[in-house]
Image (cartoon, rainbow, N blue to C red; front, side, top):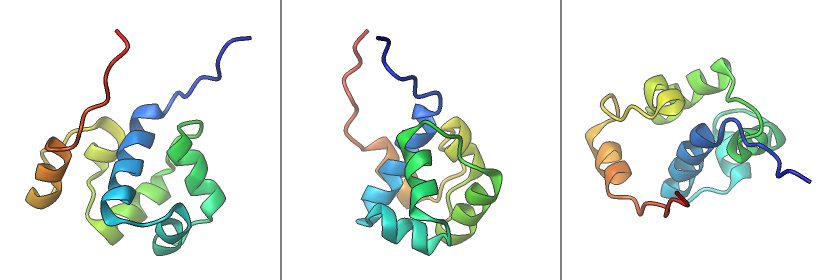
Length: 95
């Protein structure tokens, strides 16, 4: 049986990184962005794409840029977040 695809795993990893950086649970993060925890959980799992409305709320609430959330472009992040992103431990690639 093939493993389940996670088509939005890159977006999910950035969301999870940010939430963990803030020390929030999924429920707490979802509450701060006025989203159901179940919807946020699907975004963070990588099985559902982050909605534009969700991304805009995250941008307004936490200052994450849309370029960062969707494309991983860290240039538009505030310097403290950009430094934290660049200093994060990297996952070992299976390639």
